[in-house]
Length: 123
Image (cartoon, rainbow, N blue to C red; front, side, top):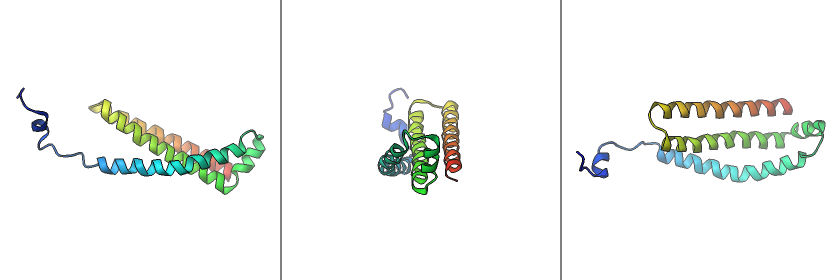
């Protein structure tokens, strides 16, 4: 058994079956973020330096609030997918499953908190 090649050890194990789907999800979210991040910077830059009341009034309009919400959600989703790849590469066993679960809980929790804040300002 010590003289088996890597190919022989891998034969019959099959594929993970989700690599291509994960790859395209990352590509789609990165393209969406290429559009959303400049829009967010443009809208956020307009509100930067204003008083509290001016910023609340600015984000009370639909376009800046929607751009901020979409950037927040897609940003956290993209981060969670990328960090999951790093965890899968470097952490193994039960610790891997726990780390991925904690990562998803934290990312979705932060995204929900941000959406709540934006909704509270916008409505």
